[in-house]
Image 1: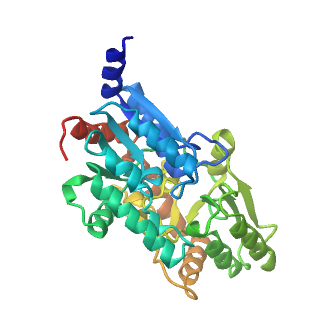
Image 2 (image 1 turned 90 degrees about the vertical axis):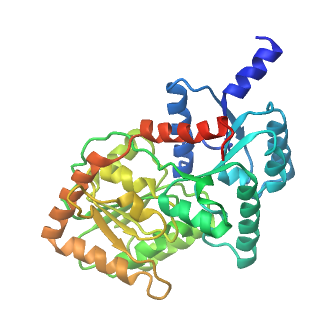
Length: 374
């Protein structure tokens, strides 16, 4: 191919900028899955996709990672369509925004940077300001839930027509048989303060009189101090035989964990969508989750209007575990409730969006960039 032909091909392609670990199966995350599946489906639909993987400690990269991102963007031809993962883009407006006049840039925000749990107020404010500068400087912003789109537009002063929603898809899956219909609880999330496994352990500690077991699936390496505190909390309450930290699971081991689950529990303190909610519903598993961020969007409703799970309000200490414990007790005590929720979950699975539809919606957003529209 000639140099001019290569440049034309580059302009026709979608350049997807992702964290360097997006395909690392030892550290699965909803954001990584979203990035990977959208890339795969766009390519399968005939849309040329070129991945730019940038390793680094995003959103606060070192000089080497910053330089690599800057060189990668500078090497793209004028007019190239670029979809940047927000974890990479939002903390470095000084690198991204100067490229906006010549590239067609969209940023995919999985989680607003300042919403991460455990940040100092000063750091949260700093990241929030950097994110605002980035999002105001690019052509389009993509959010993963209606709630996230509204929040980004309002919080950062973005016009609503520049913020678009592409909710994650869900792969088809068989109905989960469960264990006994009640007692096997499953939490699928990275083991970090934002995901709230400590809240779950504290709630379960008040239910020692009831039969249950809980498996927590998710990477353990993002916050070793939190993992250590969580293990201490499990031991302190004498729950070592009932709560298991299984680490990250993918493929058949993850399918086996879902198949045994009677209830998915997602006790997050912040969540823009919650892909595990729809993954559970696709298997007919009811969900108990904190009604934070976009989780109610993900849970949705069955065709008859019923909820396929239970939502508890986000609360501050010392009361943040009480509603979760009460909902778990109602689940374990009330067989009629369990049957109704399972019926609703099985109805809801028929309405879930697949990845082909998610990719079609993403491609429609990218078409706006190709047309030069914002």
